[in-house]
Image 1: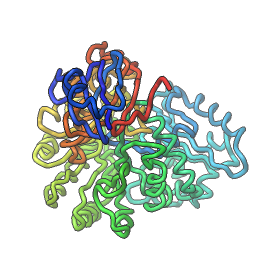
Image 2: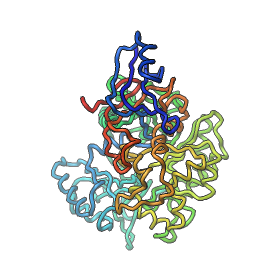
Image 3: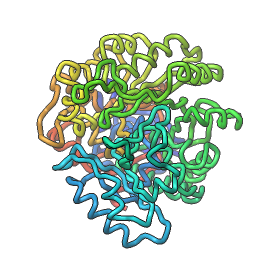
Length: 531
């Protein structure tokens, strides 16, 4: 038996403006689209439920193509520092949190961003010790490529002023060579490894908290990278299987597999797109560089505001090639974090050298900074780029300081990429940015900075149609499922995002204020704002 959806604006997203009056779904699949009269006539003996949209707008279900589901859940629980405007505000929030800590408990904060502080001077280890001397503290930067730790956390990690920098990471030191408490990229793991292990039950709880929130934002699925950080592949994978079981929660989770646990996946006789009904395994995740905010994105030219610094290569070239060769031996695509143009150059060369033979697509995650060579390589390769439109809102104007006015022309260049034939998928990188896909859609259309209200690179603004397709067709195409997901057409999955207003009729400045009415996965209403 099936459902008949009618009474609102239903956009198929196949071509701009394409709309139908009604949709009939059965067994999680779209069986027919057309007029209400025709569908009611054709399926009246099978319809057991009619859903009157009452003027609302139905779109293909939004999918975030790059996020961290467990990290998003933890951000909802941990101390959120992302909206704070000064070091003093951060320290006050930390001091308030210490009152509720038990002996030995870690104080964990998320999302600080010195670029939005009135005084962007970094908080020192000494200041953290004054706030919280007896409990270990770890404060993760918004980009998740840097953290601040107090002396207690460093002592527990056996880190002192003589501890060497790890490959692909930096322990930041002052002019006297003393550690400051700031750890960049792989150096963060020196602190994280000292934290107590979390239980599988805890992970299941966090996943449920995260998914409930994502469904309320209109997301029917997300591509996530979590399987390395919380006690290993099997423990985290089982937590996802138990949490998103299709009974209590329906949400389509596509899980990237960090290269450090690739062999663990293979030992379980699992491979690309294997899994369960609502959990599937994805490409092998690799980090090629750091982040632009902390000046660790790997660039072909030095940082404009830090002469002599070209960023950080997380792996040396030989090891990076070895990882990709290993993935190819198992027929696995790769999904590579590459923000700087040197990182993109290196990865695209290796993808060309070791092409996939099974029709899957490799992925570049971020691809924020390109040059003419890397743009041409992306055009010529079967690669999808997972972009984060909200980075435009949060990274400007300081991104111009990092790169200079000339290089910024091929940075965050989403329109150029699409017009060059590069396949792009929309994402948030939550918890780094707000997981709300409407925020991302608005950012892609407006390209307006949160900080100064200026529009940056207006020539790179996307149309609203292009922006919505990033989160529908784009996300499906990144995992070669564009023939069955991302459109409202016969044979496609019955995943829908239903909005209170017509997104194609509201003012672009108000897109992020549209309320989600319902989220539908496989034809079932899994979020209803009225309930």
